[in-house]
Image (tube, rainbow over all chains, first blue to last red; front, side, top):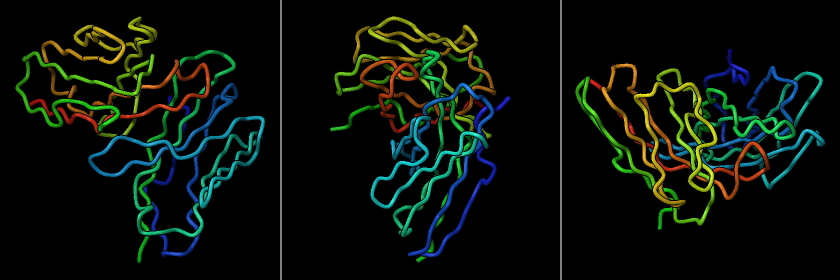
Length: 114
Length: 116
């Protein structure tokens, strides 16, 4: 049972436009969410996170939105750049419940076209 | 200076063999992890160690045995390798135990294991 789902395995976006990556979760205990970015032959690197007490967190070109009622989060990249081409994983944890781990989605491969 | 390093990067071996993957972090972190990314791209936690103490063992077959000689190292030994063990294995570390606080995990580059 996959508690964190990224239903779009891939996404192509033109350079300069907005990229929107989506993530859905099923466990209502999740209270902390992260996005990781992964280039080929490298490990995932942390990008941005959000706590469930917020509905938005912004860091430069990257913004994460959280809709708790829909159990949905999204990552917006504006403007998209060719260097953003990578696989993006969302992850979730129930920190308040001390689960000691993050549950990852299967990733979305973003391709930004020059 | 690689923060989290893994060796080897690629490992090709026959079924039934025993192999080890090494992981080292130079970040001074207390916690280290092993993840498995299978062919369906799920990235699943296998083990976590905090100050050399096993915290998580996620229903992994006992053919997999992690060993943490010190806080900077977490090695993964796999006995009697099976075809289904083929995957990419990622080591990671964090300052403190992730999933209890908001510490970020830092991942190694991965080890691609292929069992023939």
